[in-house]
Image (cartoon, rainbow, N blue to C red):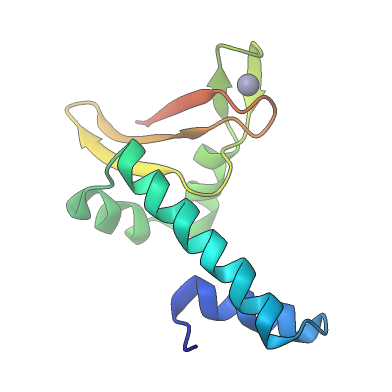
Length: 109
Ligand SMILES: [Zn+2]
């Protein structure tokens, strides 16, 4: 199986760890399924994504690690699989709290 993008990186990491191709494929297929599922939860619009990707890494990381979670009541980080969309306030990151798994969002003003 041929992998691209982040799946390729994952596969390379697995190979470095000494996993066999069967195991790698199994894990990557699961990850792909999870990504499909996440797509259904929210949509990343392309325009918003382009703006987001145009920002320096440090700025993005700052937003990704400074979100307020109403469920655990504190500052938290996003897990992988967040969505970016554009709103009249600016970009909004939506995703999952790394601490409790609740839904969180961060307005990037
Ligand atoms: Zn939380």
